[in-house]
Length: 305
Ligand SMILES: Nc1nc2c(ncn2[C@@H]2O[C@H](COP(=O)(O)OP(=O)(O)O)[C@@H](O)[C@H]2O)c(=O)[nH]1
Ligand SMILES: [Mg+2]
Image (cartoon, rainbow, N blue to C red):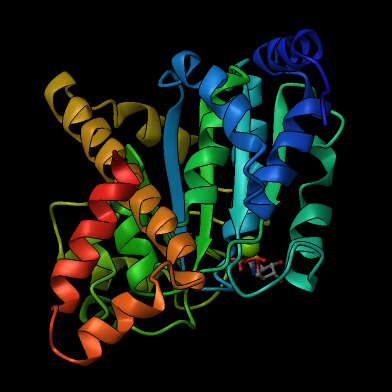
Protein backbone atom coordinates (compact mmCIF):
# COMPACT_ATOMS: atom_id res chain seq x y z
CA UNK A 1 0.00 0.00 0.00
CA UNK A 2 1.75 3.19 1.12
CA UNK A 3 5.42 2.81 0.34
CA UNK A 4 7.32 5.29 2.47
CA UNK A 5 6.83 6.66 5.93
CA UNK A 6 5.78 10.09 4.64
CA UNK A 7 2.97 8.54 2.58
CA UNK A 8 1.97 6.42 5.53
CA UNK A 9 1.71 9.46 7.77
CA UNK A 10 -0.40 11.30 5.20
CA UNK A 11 -2.63 8.23 4.94
CA UNK A 12 -3.15 8.15 8.72
CA UNK A 13 -3.82 11.91 8.84
CA UNK A 14 -6.45 11.58 6.15
CA UNK A 15 -8.27 8.92 8.13
CA UNK A 16 -8.14 11.12 11.22
CA UNK A 17 -9.75 13.88 9.16
CA UNK A 18 -12.58 11.51 8.27
CA UNK A 19 -11.52 10.87 4.69
CA UNK A 20 -13.50 7.94 3.34
CA UNK A 21 -11.12 6.50 0.73
CA UNK A 22 -8.16 5.66 2.95
CA UNK A 23 -10.53 4.46 5.67
CA UNK A 24 -12.17 2.08 3.19
CA UNK A 25 -8.78 0.82 2.07
CA UNK A 26 -7.75 0.15 5.64
CA UNK A 27 -11.03 -1.64 6.34
CA UNK A 28 -10.36 -3.92 3.40
CA UNK A 29 -6.97 -4.81 4.86
CA UNK A 30 -8.64 -5.39 8.20
CA UNK A 31 -11.27 -7.62 6.69
CA UNK A 32 -8.59 -9.72 5.00
CA UNK A 33 -6.59 -9.82 8.24
CA UNK A 34 -3.66 -8.40 6.34
CA UNK A 35 -0.82 -7.75 8.83
CA UNK A 36 -0.13 -4.46 7.02
CA UNK A 37 -3.16 -3.01 8.83
CA UNK A 38 -1.41 -3.16 12.19
CA UNK A 39 0.91 -0.26 11.41
CA UNK A 40 -2.04 2.07 10.77
CA UNK A 41 -4.14 0.76 13.63
CA UNK A 42 -1.30 1.47 16.03
CA UNK A 43 -1.14 5.06 14.84
CA UNK A 44 -4.90 5.49 15.05
CA UNK A 45 -5.45 3.92 18.45
CA UNK A 46 -4.45 6.96 20.56
CA UNK A 47 -7.16 8.93 18.76
CA UNK A 48 -9.95 6.49 19.59
CA UNK A 49 -12.26 6.01 22.54
CA UNK A 50 -14.45 9.02 21.81
CA UNK A 51 -17.27 7.48 19.79
CA UNK A 52 -20.47 6.29 21.37
CA UNK A 53 -20.93 2.66 20.47
CA UNK A 54 -24.48 1.48 19.87
CA UNK A 55 -25.42 -2.11 19.10
CA UNK A 56 -28.48 -2.82 16.96
CA UNK A 57 -29.36 -6.45 17.20
CA UNK A 58 -32.16 -8.97 16.81
CA UNK A 59 -33.33 -11.77 14.55
CA UNK A 60 -32.91 -11.51 10.77
CA UNK A 61 -35.87 -9.88 9.07
CA UNK A 62 -37.24 -7.82 11.96
CA UNK A 63 -36.23 -4.61 10.18
CA UNK A 64 -32.88 -3.64 11.72
CA UNK A 65 -31.41 -2.23 8.52
CA UNK A 66 -34.58 -0.33 7.68
CA UNK A 67 -34.60 1.12 11.19
CA UNK A 68 -30.88 1.88 10.97
CA UNK A 69 -31.55 3.95 7.88
CA UNK A 70 -34.16 5.98 9.77
CA UNK A 71 -31.84 6.43 12.73
CA UNK A 72 -29.12 7.77 10.45
CA UNK A 73 -31.53 10.44 9.22
CA UNK A 74 -32.59 11.29 12.76
CA UNK A 75 -29.01 11.64 14.03
CA UNK A 76 -28.01 13.63 10.98
CA UNK A 77 -30.80 16.08 11.67
CA UNK A 78 -29.15 16.59 15.02
CA UNK A 79 -25.93 17.33 13.16
CA UNK A 80 -24.18 14.30 14.59
CA UNK A 81 -21.80 12.19 12.55
CA UNK A 82 -22.40 8.47 12.18
CA UNK A 83 -20.49 5.34 11.34
CA UNK A 84 -22.32 2.10 10.63
CA UNK A 85 -20.86 -1.38 10.59
CA UNK A 86 -23.22 -4.04 9.32
CA UNK A 87 -21.98 -7.45 10.34
CA UNK A 88 -23.20 -10.49 8.54
CA UNK A 89 -21.25 -13.63 9.32
CA UNK A 90 -23.24 -15.66 6.81
CA UNK A 91 -22.90 -13.53 3.72
CA UNK A 92 -19.69 -12.61 2.02
CA UNK A 93 -19.03 -8.94 1.41
CA UNK A 94 -20.83 -8.89 -1.92
CA UNK A 95 -23.64 -11.20 -0.82
CA UNK A 96 -27.32 -10.55 -1.30
CA UNK A 97 -28.17 -9.44 2.23
CA UNK A 98 -25.39 -6.91 2.26
CA UNK A 99 -26.33 -5.61 -1.12
CA UNK A 100 -29.87 -5.18 0.18
CA UNK A 101 -28.56 -3.21 3.14
CA UNK A 102 -26.53 -1.00 0.85
CA UNK A 103 -29.50 -0.23 -1.33
CA UNK A 104 -31.68 0.48 1.63
CA UNK A 105 -29.14 2.85 3.08
CA UNK A 106 -28.50 4.51 -0.24
CA UNK A 107 -29.94 7.94 0.59
CA UNK A 108 -26.99 8.36 2.94
CA UNK A 109 -24.22 7.29 0.62
CA UNK A 110 -23.57 10.81 -0.57
CA UNK A 111 -23.54 12.28 2.91
CA UNK A 112 -19.94 12.82 4.07
CA UNK A 113 -20.86 12.69 7.74
CA UNK A 114 -22.15 9.17 7.34
CA UNK A 115 -19.91 6.21 6.75
CA UNK A 116 -21.51 2.83 6.15
CA UNK A 117 -19.58 -0.36 5.78
CA UNK A 118 -20.59 -4.00 5.72
CA UNK A 119 -18.10 -6.30 7.27
CA UNK A 120 -17.95 -9.97 6.43
CA UNK A 121 -16.52 -11.62 9.49
CA UNK A 122 -15.61 -15.26 9.59
CA UNK A 123 -17.95 -15.65 12.50
CA UNK A 124 -15.41 -17.86 14.17
CA UNK A 125 -15.95 -16.65 17.69
CA UNK A 126 -19.58 -15.92 18.21
CA UNK A 127 -19.86 -13.08 15.77
CA UNK A 128 -17.23 -11.00 17.48
CA UNK A 129 -14.02 -11.02 15.53
CA UNK A 130 -10.78 -9.08 15.77
CA UNK A 131 -11.88 -7.39 12.54
CA UNK A 132 -14.89 -5.92 14.31
CA UNK A 133 -12.76 -4.28 17.00
CA UNK A 134 -10.34 -2.95 14.41
CA UNK A 135 -13.17 -1.58 12.29
CA UNK A 136 -14.74 0.15 15.29
CA UNK A 137 -11.38 1.83 15.97
CA UNK A 138 -11.17 3.10 12.39
CA UNK A 139 -14.64 4.67 12.49
CA UNK A 140 -13.92 6.11 15.92
CA UNK A 141 -10.60 7.57 14.72
CA UNK A 142 -12.42 9.11 11.74
CA UNK A 143 -14.27 11.19 14.29
CA UNK A 144 -17.67 9.54 14.04
CA UNK A 145 -19.59 10.57 17.15
CA UNK A 146 -21.87 7.55 16.97
CA UNK A 147 -20.79 4.13 15.79
CA UNK A 148 -23.62 1.69 15.17
CA UNK A 149 -22.95 -2.02 14.89
CA UNK A 150 -25.75 -4.08 13.35
CA UNK A 151 -25.50 -7.79 14.02
CA UNK A 152 -27.72 -10.62 12.87
CA UNK A 153 -28.61 -13.79 14.66
CA UNK A 154 -30.14 -15.03 17.84
CA UNK A 155 -28.11 -16.07 20.82
CA UNK A 156 -24.38 -15.79 21.37
CA UNK A 157 -23.80 -12.87 19.04
CA UNK A 158 -26.22 -10.66 20.85
CA UNK A 159 -24.82 -11.54 24.22
CA UNK A 160 -21.36 -10.62 23.06
CA UNK A 161 -22.36 -7.42 21.37
CA UNK A 162 -23.95 -6.43 24.64
CA UNK A 163 -20.52 -6.56 26.27
CA UNK A 164 -19.16 -4.20 23.67
CA UNK A 165 -21.74 -1.52 23.10
CA UNK A 166 -22.65 1.25 25.48
CA UNK A 167 -26.26 1.03 24.42
CA UNK A 168 -27.85 -2.07 22.96
CA UNK A 169 -31.04 -1.71 20.99
CA UNK A 170 -32.81 -5.04 20.64
CA UNK A 171 -35.15 -5.06 17.66
CA UNK A 172 -38.10 -7.43 17.54
CA UNK A 173 -41.23 -7.55 15.45
CA UNK A 174 -44.47 -9.52 15.27
CA UNK A 175 -44.08 -12.82 13.45
CA UNK A 176 -40.75 -13.74 15.04
CA UNK A 177 -41.99 -15.61 18.05
CA UNK A 178 -44.21 -14.56 20.92
CA UNK A 179 -43.06 -12.91 24.13
CA UNK A 180 -42.52 -16.22 25.91
CA UNK A 181 -40.25 -17.54 23.16
CA UNK A 182 -38.28 -14.29 23.15
CA UNK A 183 -37.84 -14.49 26.89
CA UNK A 184 -36.79 -18.13 26.73
CA UNK A 185 -34.16 -17.32 24.09
CA UNK A 186 -32.60 -14.98 26.65
CA UNK A 187 -33.00 -12.08 24.26
CA UNK A 188 -34.77 -9.63 26.52
CA UNK A 189 -32.00 -9.17 29.04
CA UNK A 190 -29.44 -8.03 26.51
CA UNK A 191 -31.36 -4.98 25.29
CA UNK A 192 -31.10 -1.66 27.08
CA UNK A 193 -33.89 -0.53 24.79
CA UNK A 194 -36.36 -2.95 23.26
CA UNK A 195 -37.91 -1.91 19.99
CA UNK A 196 -40.95 -3.65 18.60
CA UNK A 197 -40.71 -2.75 14.93
CA UNK A 198 -43.38 -3.16 12.26
CA UNK A 199 -45.78 -1.34 14.51
CA UNK A 200 -48.00 -1.00 11.45
CA UNK A 201 -48.62 -4.76 11.45
CA UNK A 202 -51.24 -6.63 13.39
CA UNK A 203 -49.79 -8.18 16.51
CA UNK A 204 -47.25 -5.45 17.29
CA UNK A 205 -49.39 -3.89 20.00
CA UNK A 206 -49.99 -7.23 21.64
CA UNK A 207 -46.29 -8.09 21.58
CA UNK A 208 -45.46 -4.79 23.29
CA UNK A 209 -48.10 -5.47 25.92
CA UNK A 210 -46.82 -8.99 26.62
CA UNK A 211 -43.23 -7.85 26.81
CA UNK A 212 -44.14 -5.07 29.23
CA UNK A 213 -45.92 -7.54 31.45
CA UNK A 214 -42.87 -9.77 31.49
CA UNK A 215 -40.30 -7.12 32.12
CA UNK A 216 -41.52 -3.86 33.51
CA UNK A 217 -38.00 -2.58 34.14
CA UNK A 218 -37.03 -2.17 30.51
CA UNK A 219 -37.72 0.56 28.02
CA UNK A 220 -40.02 -0.97 25.41
CA UNK A 221 -41.09 1.06 22.43
CA UNK A 222 -43.21 0.43 19.33
CA UNK A 223 -42.04 1.85 16.02
CA UNK A 224 -42.64 1.42 12.33
CA UNK A 225 -39.42 1.83 10.40
CA UNK A 226 -41.11 1.83 7.01
CA UNK A 227 -43.69 4.43 8.04
CA UNK A 228 -41.27 6.41 10.17
CA UNK A 229 -43.50 6.21 13.23
CA UNK A 230 -42.18 6.29 16.77
CA UNK A 231 -38.72 7.28 15.61
CA UNK A 232 -38.43 10.51 17.55
CA UNK A 233 -39.43 8.75 20.78
CA UNK A 234 -36.80 6.12 20.10
CA UNK A 235 -34.09 8.70 19.52
CA UNK A 236 -35.11 10.54 22.69
CA UNK A 237 -34.86 7.27 24.58
CA UNK A 238 -31.43 6.57 23.14
CA UNK A 239 -30.25 10.00 24.23
CA UNK A 240 -31.66 9.50 27.68
CA UNK A 241 -29.65 6.29 27.91
CA UNK A 242 -26.55 8.34 28.85
CA UNK A 243 -24.73 6.06 31.23
CA UNK A 244 -23.43 7.15 34.61
CA UNK A 245 -19.64 7.65 34.45
CA UNK A 246 -18.92 4.60 36.56
CA UNK A 247 -21.02 2.27 34.39
CA UNK A 248 -19.61 3.73 31.21
CA UNK A 249 -16.07 3.18 32.44
CA UNK A 250 -16.88 -0.40 33.35
CA UNK A 251 -18.26 -1.02 29.86
CA UNK A 252 -15.20 0.51 28.23
CA UNK A 253 -12.84 -1.57 30.33
CA UNK A 254 -14.74 -4.73 29.45
CA UNK A 255 -14.46 -3.69 25.80
CA UNK A 256 -10.68 -3.59 26.16
CA UNK A 257 -10.66 -6.97 27.86
CA UNK A 258 -12.81 -8.54 25.15
CA UNK A 259 -10.56 -7.08 22.50
CA UNK A 260 -7.43 -8.41 24.18
CA UNK A 261 -9.00 -11.85 24.47
CA UNK A 262 -9.92 -11.71 20.83
CA UNK A 263 -6.43 -10.69 19.71
CA UNK A 264 -4.84 -13.29 21.89
CA UNK A 265 -7.01 -15.97 20.37
CA UNK A 266 -6.19 -14.75 16.90
CA UNK A 267 -2.44 -14.77 17.43
CA UNK A 268 -2.57 -18.21 18.98
CA UNK A 269 -4.71 -19.47 16.14
CA UNK A 270 -2.27 -18.10 13.59
CA UNK A 271 0.49 -20.05 15.26
CA UNK A 272 -1.58 -23.18 15.40
CA UNK A 273 -2.28 -23.39 11.67
CA UNK A 274 1.22 -24.59 11.01
CA UNK A 275 2.23 -26.63 14.00
CA UNK A 276 5.19 -24.80 15.46
CA UNK A 277 6.74 -27.86 17.10
CA UNK A 278 9.69 -29.90 15.96
CA UNK A 279 9.44 -33.60 15.26
CA UNK A 280 11.50 -34.27 18.37
CA UNK A 281 9.11 -32.30 20.53
CA UNK A 282 6.09 -34.13 19.14
CA UNK A 283 7.89 -37.45 19.58
CA UNK A 284 8.65 -36.54 23.21
CA UNK A 285 4.96 -35.96 23.91
CA UNK A 286 4.04 -39.16 22.06
CA UNK A 287 6.49 -41.13 24.20
CA UNK A 288 5.17 -39.47 27.36
CA UNK A 289 8.55 -37.96 28.09
CA UNK A 290 6.98 -34.57 28.06
CA UNK A 291 3.42 -33.43 28.66
CA UNK A 292 1.55 -31.42 26.02
CA UNK A 293 0.90 -28.86 28.76
CA UNK A 294 4.57 -28.22 29.36
CA UNK A 295 5.27 -28.02 25.64
CA UNK A 296 2.50 -25.50 25.04
CA UNK A 297 3.63 -23.44 28.01
CA UNK A 298 7.20 -23.21 26.82
CA UNK A 299 6.03 -22.32 23.31
CA UNK A 300 3.86 -19.53 24.73
CA UNK A 301 6.74 -18.19 26.82
CA UNK A 302 8.90 -18.09 23.74
CA UNK A 303 6.19 -16.36 21.71
CA UNK A 304 5.64 -13.55 24.17
CA UNK A 305 9.27 -12.89 25.03
N1 LIG B 1 -44.58 -3.71 7.58
C1 LIG B 1 -43.35 -3.35 7.90
N2 LIG B 1 -42.31 -3.94 7.31
C2 LIG B 1 -41.04 -3.56 7.65
C3 LIG B 1 -40.81 -2.54 8.62
N3 LIG B 1 -39.47 -2.40 8.77
C4 LIG B 1 -38.90 -3.25 7.91
N4 LIG B 1 -39.83 -3.95 7.23
C5 LIG B 1 -39.60 -4.97 6.19
O1 LIG B 1 -39.04 -6.13 6.76
C6 LIG B 1 -38.13 -6.74 5.85
C7 LIG B 1 -36.77 -6.96 6.51
O2 LIG B 1 -36.18 -5.71 6.81
P1 LIG B 1 -34.62 -5.53 7.09
O3 LIG B 1 -34.42 -4.11 7.46
O4 LIG B 1 -33.82 -6.08 5.98
O5 LIG B 1 -34.46 -6.47 8.36
P2 LIG B 1 -33.09 -6.95 9.09
O6 LIG B 1 -32.78 -8.32 8.58
O7 LIG B 1 -33.47 -7.01 10.54
O8 LIG B 1 -32.02 -5.95 8.80
C8 LIG B 1 -38.06 -5.83 4.64
O9 LIG B 1 -38.89 -6.35 3.64
C9 LIG B 1 -38.58 -4.50 5.16
O10 LIG B 1 -39.20 -3.72 4.17
C10 LIG B 1 -41.95 -1.93 9.24
O11 LIG B 1 -41.85 -1.05 10.10
N5 LIG B 1 -43.19 -2.39 8.85
MG1 LIG C 1 -30.01 -6.14 7.99
